[in-house]
Image (cartoon, rainbow, N blue to C red; front, side, top):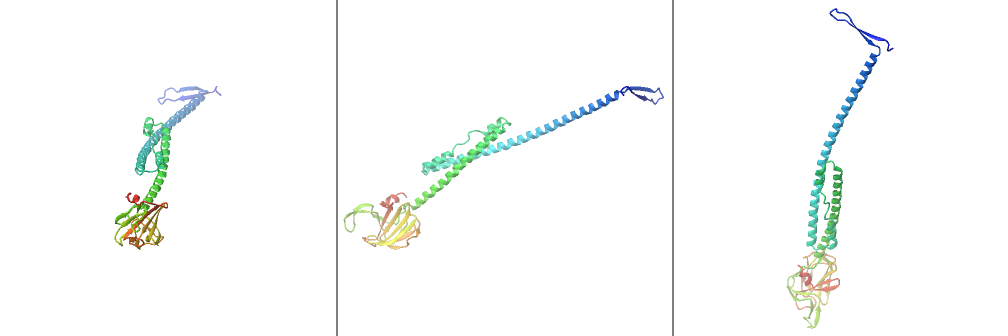
Length: 303
């Protein structure tokens, strides 16, 4: 079929001679192939151009996302730094508080565990290169874990401190440091000559001279154990303050409490009198610790 030819006649408008163009039969095939090749090449070029535009747009989006993430990470890093600074301040305050309050060593050791922390500067790490986000994020996670651990230590320590101060306050309020009656001490704790017999004997408390009817108050919080009569002490009140401490009040004329009653520091217990064996109105006051009488002055001097 390639031997056939294609004849094209060109007819000029001015009546000139007709021109004849003879095209070999194979030429149309080459023209068709050239056209197809041109279309295919144009499609390839267009596809590559569109692909480059898409990749460029994706890259721009990734860059914007990276910048945004860097800003967020830097802000988070700054928050962690400020939080670490505040936690360091809180830890130091707790440490000073324990030193001033003579806190036991085991609590001090617990607080020391909450000191310190990461020494790395995440802001410096981030400023080196925006492409090191993974390293920065790992550091931030490490810092956050460190802060959470320290917060746990501080919380545990705070519970122990609260319990310690609660117990210390309870012990303080149960310590008979308040003078039970206003008056003058006429006989102290220790050996003396008995005012009635003249014999040398051990005096187990304090004798405080005061007018009859003077109020006798609880020197500390406690529970009234008994309100009874005794041959030597006359009418007597006994109060248990806990922690092994008991107080006795002898020779009273009136009793304002009853057994089992809880009394607070400064609350009125009885009135000064001269019941029992006595030379006149006064209060016989004893402090017993773990079953042994001790000098009440020890506690009164702590005020």
